[in-house]
Image (tube, rainbow, N blue to C red; front, side):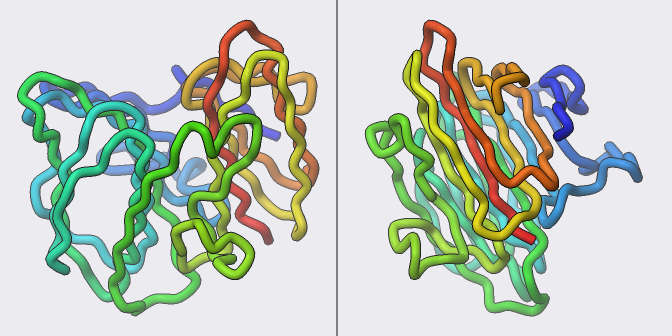
Length: 237
């Protein structure tokens, strides 16, 4: 279990973008930090009002966007357009190729989002897009599946072309939950807000993450005085 503290991530500050890279991305390259399992990108972005990423291409990547605060405007070459609100998750299969833009439509309100890229199980897939709102109430004191390749098991989740299940959770003060992998493999934990005690010994705070391998059972404890919000990604084998 490797703990990465928030301030250990690679930081980029521009006039409209404040971001943290958990893995090599753009101008940041570290051959020892390219990916973890199929997770290739984990960017923690804050986009100022009026800023954003204009139309740009992607291919052969599974892209998940989760908006924490503010509103993000999405447009793509498949004809999809609209807003991503707090609590909404968007998934795209870039496949053979897709172009999209991600803009902050507000003139003055920042948008805070997480964007994750996963290497797909195969190349040359047909591009696809879907988006769904998940409420805070669904996540209280449970691990709620929001993205998964196991749609038969989790029909309420968004699909993904990789052996991945992504959970969101909000633990109230004094609560704990456990998780047991069905197929031992890699897992990734990221704290969005608040503080979380992992397996009784690791205290993680907002922006901290854990890269977990060969540990198939996890316990999440909130022994603080405030609620927390975190993400668990189970990448299986």
